[in-house]
Amino acid sequence: SQTIHQWPATLVQPVGSPLSLECTVEGTSNPNLYWYRQAAGRGLQLLFYSVGIGQISSEVPQNLSASRPQDRQFILSSKKLLLSDSGFYLCAWTRRGFTGATYGYTFGSGTRLTVV
Amino acid sequence: DAKTTQPPSMDCAEGRAANLPCNHSTISGNEYVYWYRQIHSQGPQYIIHGLKNNETNEMASLIITEDRKSSTLILPHATLRDTAVYYCIVRGGNKLVFGAGTILRVKS
Image 1: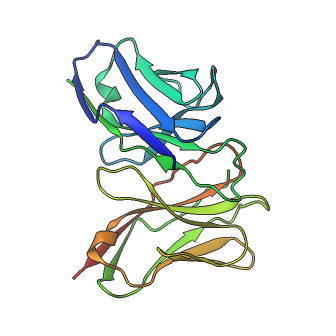
Image 2: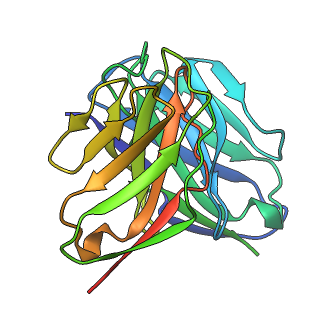
């Protein structure tokens, strides 16, 4: 069966510090991968998605970047965190070639980031 | 992807059916309707999806109108654990874009 892992579960970082959040998927190959952010009391905002190694689409201009160094690994990074980067970060995957006919998205358990 | 409109909040008595509406009047022919829910501090959970026909699974039923411009998610016997934010999403491409959703409060 497929599983998705995200870590860490919680993180407190000072303003100006770097960030690296990792997401890995097991039990499948060639997944589509996604990063979402949810600010406190707000909805889910799609940040990045990837349909293959090295292929990143950015949805919102911001202080963050994403990379996909391996097929089942998706990394969210920042060189210098801002207070506004605080939030709940979620990774998700779906099967490659997903047209909506069969498969949904599976989400990880999330990382709660607090920038202080 | 088409936009969706949902009421911001709804209340439901425990044990009763919860009917959550969603309008998606600009939906196109190849776009599916998806429903997810998010319980506080957790990742969204897939509930059900459909294209034209009504669908039912162990969690819920999805009723899609004949013109596909609206749908209703039905939780047949709501429990306190069904209290969550419910998202209706219309999707046809690579991305799943969430709106504000409906906060469902199940009360005893």
